[in-house]
Image (cartoon, rainbow, N blue to C red; front, side, top):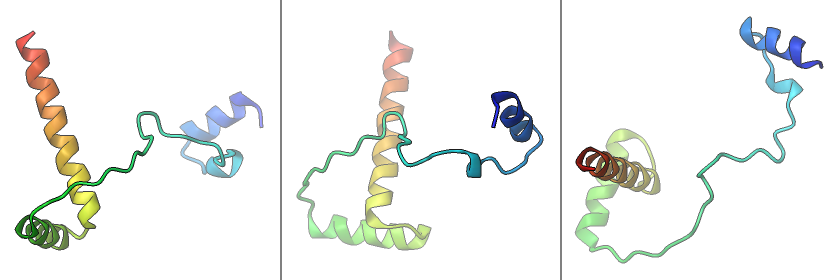
Length: 81
């Protein structure tokens, strides 16, 4: 498919995924690195309760909260510069 046709399909809301090879697609800044963190049992229990309440996994709630905190810290750092 030519780029012009692809763009027209995209702009009109047509399905375009069938025209893409996603086998080697990567999300920028999303490279994973495994770490181990020792957390007190009460914190794990609280994380599990919150994750269940929101309907996500423990790992997901940890990632979201860490990302939010890091973004907040970066915003404060930029504001004070």
